Length: 214
Image (tube, rainbow, N blue to C red; front, side):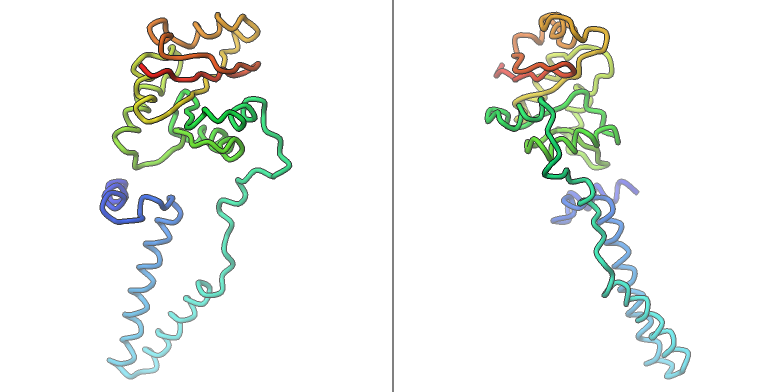
């Protein structure tokens, strides 16, 4: 139940820092601990062979937990040191003015994974990701910047600025790739949003904008 996770993330210290597999594992360990205590009480009450067998069986179930090899859940998603950054990732990595980044649109689903992968290479915090328990601020950001087809509105710009995001990236629509930079900017940014953004970098696929303080 998602409401249980949201409640625990708000009121149980450290819970919000655990990802979904760890949270499920937490409940499994609690259940195994309770089952172990109940099983160990059986021989004391009955003094029978059956109770001893139950206790021994429970102990055997715990052995894999003691000797299991840790699974590298996240290590498989770490880029190799030899893996090259894209030109955009290299620019973000080298630019000290990029404090926090948003790659638009914010979809909040598994399509965010490549963007999260890229963050491991350019080393900047990003607003992208997916989770069942978002703070109200990020829910507002996703609702205003999760546009699928229309241009970026002032509400999205102000929401990003309010969260401390300094830059954002927008993919260039295929229909205008190769067009002059001014045409590309006006195709993805609404006219009333232009005073709040500045084009910082452009390549063949993406535009990097810097947010101006309103």
